[in-house]
Image (cartoon, rainbow over all chains, first blue to last red):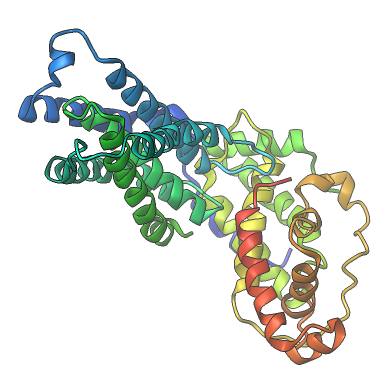
Length: 211
Length: 174
């Protein structure tokens, strides 16, 4: 081998390492999501239906879909740090598909019930958008650090998925406070925050995780 | 002779726990495996650099190997990533006459077709793969490649760009 000298350098530099574990990679984002739920509930208050112990069906559906989207994509992100040719990890596609039900439903509802009695909830929505993004940003940080430690081979996909995962989990955390009950409001503002988070992820994350 | 998957995996697991003797054997054997893996997939004067870069990546990213999974698909993912990265770098060398279609002896036995670079290249459009081989691997100029393939010079450039971009998204595909 021509590179014998370099091999000896690498051998001398060897220290024990613990193999990266998916559960460990998910632990910190999970802790941050729980912390943000606690922060939102303590500072802004719990949704009235949740506080009363009678959650509205839309609340359950919304939180369930966001949780599914967030954790399925977060798992895919964490898994990308440990590459392997032939490793299939497409579960997140189904979660994204499920999450798309909301904006599609909103579009149908908006078209079929478009009228003057549908006030545009810009102020509340904009606040929701900002809170979701703030939580998303915090959730993205440990995922980016995890990817930097690992060896992701598709940097652009990792960027999209990190943004999607963080967006989904951030919105899930905020959903414990969010007063929206109409599918149109939920779809517009939650979709906006998740899509924005995904775009930010695509633009920024690949530069941070290149190796 | 190059060690098999089972042996390499055991060596890698021991290396993760800090066994320097096993690590030395692993790097030696992996270096040989990479020599075959990259054979005819990049200019001969770039192979040693590419092997070295891949081994350094193995060293830096050794905690990303999952002991529950196979070793060769893991190192193949790293090798493919480094290979695409190398092709993206602008380098110029004398045009050679590499025969891309001739599989190197014993290669298939060792790594399996599914994780090979040949397999990766079949996943992008033929016209893109053809110009990447001619320009980035064999070192032909854009003008020469344009003449050989019948594609305009601007199309050759576009196909190289698109092909490399596509390859980068397919690293872990088999």
